[in-house]
Image 1 (tube, rainbow, N blue to C red):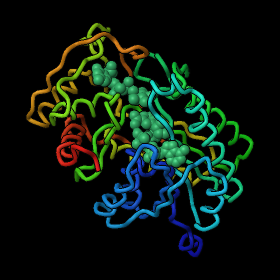
Image 2 (spheres, protein in one colour):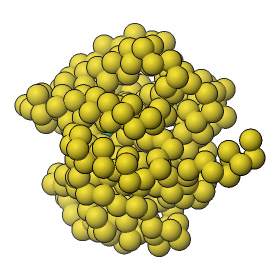
Image 3 (tube, helix red, strand yellow):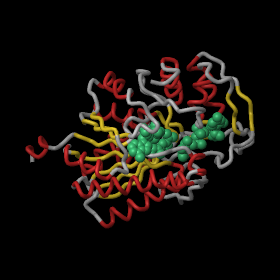
Image 4 (cartoon, rainbow, N blue to C red):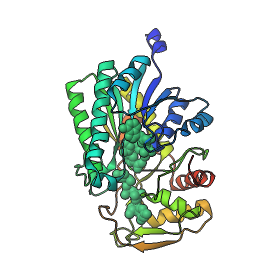
Length: 343
Ligand code: NAD
Ligand code: UFG
């Protein structure tokens, strides 16, 4: 038994590991004694992130440039490395793009996951952590627990839900597999060093990067998408979760899937909702800058409010988000100020 533990591989394949959440998870994996091996096609990321991860964590992740849909490449990767488990971040995530290019989204997110799963099966690797999203719930009254009905409202959300359902079928057919489906709420913030963070291409879709770009002077003002929602101040309410808390949640989920077979579906959120205006105020405190804004119409497809019931992740993983909105804004600002043009 002791020999078995000594010989256990610490190499974790991290698809999409050059991206926002993946890069932060590499830092957390290294801190926990794992050796991340990143596979990424750089479609939405910059390879220089690996230098930064090395600076923070003192160890460089392994690196393979390539696409998760490339079965021959995956077979080579699994043959050349003794991989203990896979964290699968690689995917497309822009809701609006998914509406104009649904098949591109299903191809990348759904087909990509199937190719990866088949390559894992062929290689005898049976532990998988998958990036799902709270968007699978659609409009449901918060707090949202994992057994809430799922009614995704756009192709991106449906691509995540299809993956969840098909991985569920797969786990039933292969009961020795262990799969965690992690439904993230709204990941924001950056590593506290300010060396890695989120750098969206073009105009940000999401609130926090937009606010950060206004604070640093890259954009003139925020447009608040509606202030007539049935929420305390009329603006949309979301469960913002610090990306390092999320990263630590992945390490906890990985440990769990390595312990026992099964299928786990877990929310990763704080359980607390904040409005758009609360985020603006917290960012003003963090940055010492004014964030000018105007109020525009509601954004089509937005729900008034959502936040997680995060109790299952606490019970099953012993994981809880520890960092609050102020830390999210302070860390996001440190990254934004130090890297206004990204890497
Ligand atoms: P990101 O775009 O920063 O990271 C995704 C990474 O995957 C990028 O580096 C990209 O280059 C890579 N990639 C995309 N398709 C690929 C492919 N076919 N082969 C290889 N690499 C590929 O996004 P993120 O915010 O870090 O999100 C990571 C995962 O979490 C995604 O699956 C996303 O859908 C999911 N998620 C994100 C959020 C969020 O708000 N950020 C919320 C819920 C779920
Ligand atoms: N908002 C603004 N102005 C902006 C951007 C956003 O007022 O410029 C508002 C939105 O209307 C919403 C809140 O800020 O009320 C948060 O919006 P985000 O775009 O940051 O986040 P969403 O909750 O809309 O979507 C995010 C991810 C999706 C994911 C979803 C899961 O972007 O990919 O969470 O819950 F599917």
